[in-house]
Image (tube, rainbow, N blue to C red; front, side):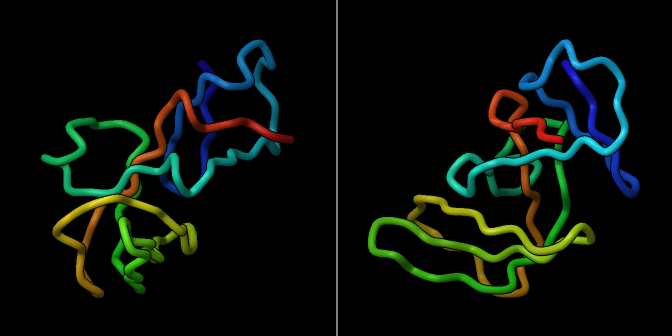
Length: 103
């Protein structure tokens, strides 16, 4: 496991193991791999970033959200029946197995 540190947050990733400690590494993740919800819905306590729903777009079977966080905006795709509203506070989860380390 490798840890990525940024302003006040530490994210763990499995991708990129064996790199040792290096500066300037970044993490990448697909919008479909990000998880969105409340602490109770996500049931995890790591790789979480609090944010607020900025835009909610219905795409037929799913919703696409733009989430405002202190690290910038993230696009999250999620299938759900009960959508989140604009302005609602949520958590963005970066699953360890989906977070890819890049240089």
